[in-house]
Amino acid sequence: MDLLPVVSSAVEDKPSRKRLPHWLRREIPSGFGYHATANIIDELGLETVCESAKCPNRSECWSSRTATFMVMGDVCTRPCGFCSVNKGRTQPLEEDEPHRVAQAAARLGLAHVVITSVSRDDLPDGGAEHFYRCVLETRRVTGASVEVLTPDFIHCKPALKRVVEAAPEVFNHNTETVPRLYKTVRGRKSDYRWTLELLDRVKRIDPQIKTKSGLMLGLGETHQEIMDTLADLRDIRCDFLTLGQYLQPTAEHLPVNRYVHPDEFTLLGHQARSLGFSAVASGPFVRSSYHAREMVVEARAEL
Image (cartoon, rainbow, N blue to C red; front, side, top):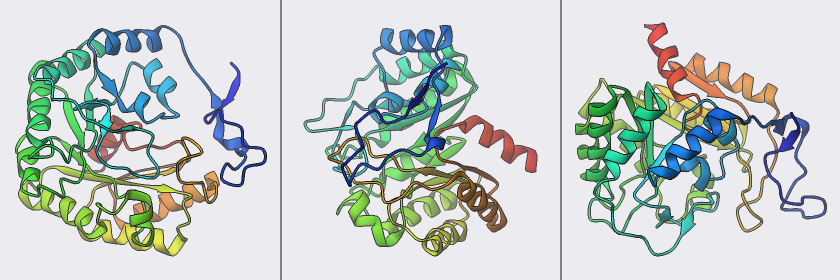
């Protein structure tokens, strides 16, 4: 198979578009599994974060007949500087979407289903009820474990309880970056302390739910800032952690400050485990839902 870069834009002479190092080139799998996954998603009219966020792992995951479903449309109300999901006028919620997600999960044979969404600050509950319905319907149809990757619900804090009431096995909300860079990366509407409080509240409402968070590296953070952020996450009993390389989707998005070497990711993974995270995924291509089921299995093996 050819080795292809995960970012296909020209990088030669633009200071905001650094040349990709060799470790960010990989084999791009394809074949029956990839096309079968694509056909199911297309037939059921579903969105995936794999496509909308230009995930570099899409081909690998779809070839393995897995995908991360993105509900509530493909237009986000948050103008985050790192994300390629569309911004603009949102569409009404589709009442049958929870059933279509469940059907797709069943047809793909998923044992662990990850459901995320765009931010919907335009909705009174931020989309909490829709998440609730997606979790229950997916579990009813498939019997699979369910992981949600939610927005922050910062404009409707009581909404969090409704999602927790669905009892997803894993509740994921990304920290994304260190406190110093928070407003630059996530925008003025986001708040680092609320991110921690949100994950803490999940544990206080239902201690059985595994909480999960992740950071993108390469935006200008220091090693000490990373470790301080990981310590903050462990202080609120966060169980699972993902660490991955930030890749600039387009020239209009935040530039990459540096490409973190795989050896540094390995070191950070070891340090994170020493802090007490029960499952850690750390590497250049790691994303929020990458090998999500394997993280659940790893955590169970530790019990």
